[in-house]
Image (cartoon, rainbow, N blue to C red; front, side):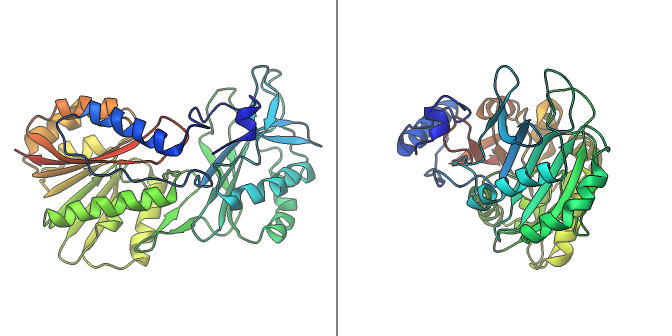
Length: 372
C-alpha cells in the first residue's frame, strides 16, 4: 500500500507504510513467536491493508474558513489528512462535510501554541452498516448553541449519522477528550452488527478499531470457550460486551465486568436485544477488585486488558484461583509475557496473532491458557 501523505513526509504515523503486507505480517509473527517460543502458534489472521480503520481521531487546525482535519506539525499548524487511506471509505467520504459544518457553525479551531479557539478534535466511528457516530471535542460549552442550531443541516446532508455528541475538554493537555459528554441526538448508541451479535457503542466507550479483525477475535474466543465445555465464564475488562455476548449460550452463565458505567449500560442494552440463550450479566466495577472479592471460580476467565496488562494482583488471583482455562487477549506482547510469567500454573497451549493494526508494528495476540 502506498500513501501520498507518508511519501510526502506529511504524516509518519504508519511506520510500516510502503512495506509489502506479507513482510509486515511475517515480521509481527516472528516477534510474537520469539516472545513466546514454546507455544504452538496458529496461522495469523490477516487484515485488509487499507480502508480497515473504523475510527478517525482528527486533530482540528487551520482557520474557521479553512479548517484542517488530521494532525498538527511540529510548530502546531494543522496538516490535513482527510483522505487517509487506512480509514474506512464512509469516514473519508464524511470528513469534508464535517469540515464544512465546522465552518458553518463558526467553530474556531483550537490553536495549541496560543491556547485559544474551541474545536480541538473531530472523532468519527463507522459501523458495519455504514452508520456514523460523530463527536466534536470542544474547549468549552460556548459553541454548543451554534452546533445545535446547524445540526439539522448536518443530519440532512449526512443522513447516515446516527449519533452526535460534544465532548467538553477545557484543559490544555495532550489528551484526546475531557470528562463531560453532551449528547446532541435522541439516539445514544451506535449499533455494531457483527453478524452473530449486535453491540451498542456509546460515544465515550472503547471498541477495537478494526471491525473485521475484532469479529475474528471474538469468534476465536468463543471457539476456545466452547472447546473447554464452559458452563460459567467471566469476561474481565469487558467494555461494551464483545467477548461476553459472543460467548453467550444455552446452559452457560456469563458475567462481564467493566469499570466504565456507560459501557456497561451499553452491554446490557445489547444483551437485552440479543439472542443466544443462557444467562448474561454485566457489572460496573474494577476488574481486579471484583474478581478478588467475588468468592467465585468460573470455568473460564477471559481478560482483555489495556496495554499495561492485568497487573500483579489479578495475575496472582488467577494463579491461585483454580480456574481451569484463561483466554488472554493482549495488544502488548511484552506485558503479556510478564503476566504469563506470574501465572506459571496456567500454561499457554495455543496462541494466535490478529493483525488489528496494519501498516504499524502494533499487534493483537490471543493466548489460550490451561491449568497444568
